[in-house]
Length: 402
Image (cartoon, rainbow, N blue to C red):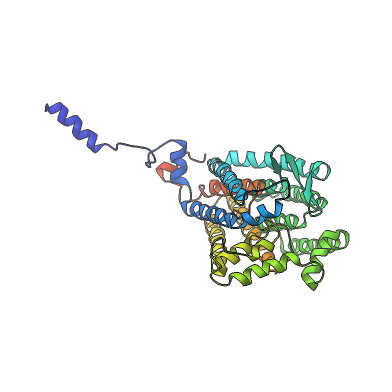
């Protein structure tokens, strides 16, 4: 072999054969891979996997309940649909997580305005069930504006409050409060008291972190309490749920069957596909899927699932605390609070520790609007946690989020 040929062969062995996903990879996906918070990503993927498992257990319940004399659903019908939503939601999450801060703000503001218009339209053109109109019917799909409003509103609020921190004379706190008030009015008209309370608590958490005074916090808490009392005396649907929770009287079928599931499952559960009490449970694939998990996989699995949510929230808050950009700090904290509060509310309702809210369990419950909106929110969280001090100064992070 000639010397020149041997030299070229030696150089080919010394050079990497594939530069893909190396730290020097300057492609959009390469920058994303090396700047993404992999701990958060793994926690989110673990929750999605747990959701697929839970929906597979709850699918026969919903399929048999909806089957009639002229219509039959396959036992795994809702599992197939959940897999479809996951196949659509994962690209949404990844694409959203690739946005830079400027793009994220623009998407959130536009989404807030569009969802607000949809919320205003819901009482007039929307449909629903159980005495509530919360969805806009699209071809083959029900769009629930409130689900998409939450992450967009949280990012928009963080932007407005961060401007207030830079210039105290700007009335951005009042603007964000006005948007919240408009959203709450629209949600109460549906009626959806649970979502109203959720976004109000998230806004209050963000405003508190932005320096809202204790006097105003107490005043807002009093106003919120007065609002709940007014809702009790004006909304029969809401009053009925409160009465059932406080007195245990009236139709308590849903929560009774949910508690029966936990009793039947015990610590270790009956085993996958072996649950029987779940077939008496309404909304097993959505609002009460946590009870299905309790029956088939046991209380230990329920604690593990709660632990995943706690780990997700704690990880996001730890990253946020190290951030020196007020917008990223407030936005990351707001999304973490939303995920944590929504999961906690759903779990406590299933355990009869809160009145029924009609609120899904993030990443776990079956549903198109819910899963796609949660995927978008998770993508926003992943995008924001790429902008943290631990990545600054690393050569592969330069320009990734400019």
